[in-house]
Image (cartoon, rainbow, N blue to C red; front, side, top):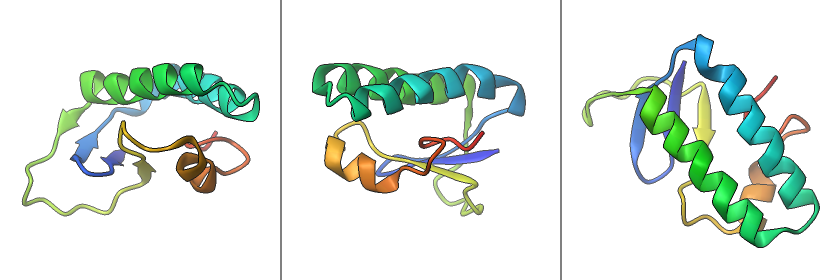
Length: 92
């Protein structure tokens, strides 16, 4: 799956890693619903770090369709809330 991190670029992440990413996404959703700004910051950073660690960056000149778009690490809680679906940032 091709994942875009806003402001950074695209990363290809194997489907086998999505259990870990979904766990972090669930934590992020709970922290957002609870208004836990500190927890939100920590978990958003952990989610983005996991995508970077588990994925393979695509070249800057490659423009593949992104199947998933994640906010940058400096995104505000309200901004991320607008990006959410019922499943969180990551479907499933």
